[in-house]
Image (tube, rainbow, N blue to C red; front, side):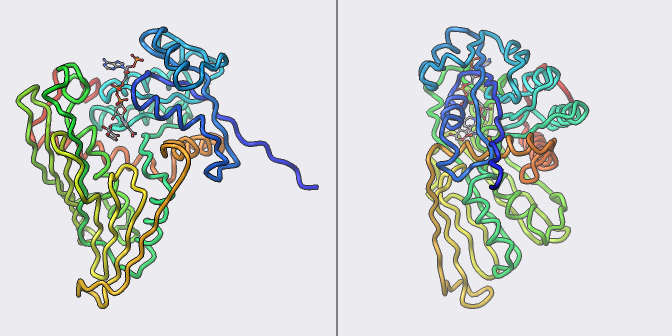
Length: 371
Ligand SMILES: NC(=O)C1=CN([C@@H]2O[C@H](COP(=O)(O)OP(=O)(O)OC[C@H]3O[C@@H](n4cnc5c(N)ncnc54)[C@H](OP(=O)(O)O)[C@@H]3O)[C@@H](O)[C@H]2O)C=CC1
Ligand SMILES: O=C1OC[C@@H](O)[C@H](O)[C@H]1O
């Protein structure tokens, strides 16, 4: 009789009780079998907030008041909890560095929301610390782990479209910033406010997937980045940002990327253009549910001879796929994911540093802890 293998159990400590922590916890509680995952399971072990009442309320609301989940009024108690294997960080961007550093110093694996930190120097410091301590560290770039993304990558690299030439991607959302308090994370420069660090990781992600990861690029980093920023007069953070990332060492390809926090999501999501056709990613680009591949009748004609649309459905919000990746990596003793590893996270943060430099968006004195 074949031995029954028990799934690997990953026990999570959740840092903060905001919107994304709520989405993540709801997904951790979805039965993994509903998405075909049999080898790992997730346990919400603790929730930490700056206030115990908020942690208790969060557990009551999103985890049916499960008495086995501890509610803490400080993040430090989560890091110190012996029953926690991995810490999920859902605080505003500029707090990620200190939160992740403290979790790693307490011996916990870390899944850290995007944008990973305020700047690339902080990200590099965290990654060096994680490696020194033999701990797993990953940016929570959840879209990378969606079944749709895995399928897009397969088609993009299988050869019939040729090499990518141009990618257009936008993620915008109207945050109605006139109505927000100045302390809101989208407006407050102390929290890394603005479109770039919040929405920018997604157009950037599709560029990394379609251009940087393409085998013809041979892992070459971008040869140039050219950016322009429009700031809001309210607090001076970027309200709209555009940037072009060129890969010219092996590919001859460009990504034309944009994000804005003052207009609705664009009608298009992302389009990857080839001499032989297009891949059109549905919107919103952080969680597309469909994509379409168009094949031209001959290279460069633009005449669509064949078109195929693929749709994807699953139970939950889509954050559980990244949680499964974390669990598998930790189970296997890996310090980083093969799909969204340290190199890509550092490269993205370096590009964002350059975009902010060119656009003249400086974070206030003291926000960046490492330079
Ligand atoms: N992957 C994804 O799809 C998404 C990712 N994000 C990312 O998650 C992070 C948080 O975003 P979101 O959940 O929308 O933000 P929220 O403002 O909803 O939540 C942030 C939480 O962080 C904690 N916090 C600690 N210090 C501060 C502070 N000084 N000011 C405000 N909050 C603080 C609070 O929790 P407490 O009081 O309990 O300590 C707060 O509820 C961002 O980095 C963002 O980019 C956001 C949305 C979607
Ligand atoms: O990660 C995100 O994805 C969805 C957006 O609405 C949100 O602001 C952003 O943080």
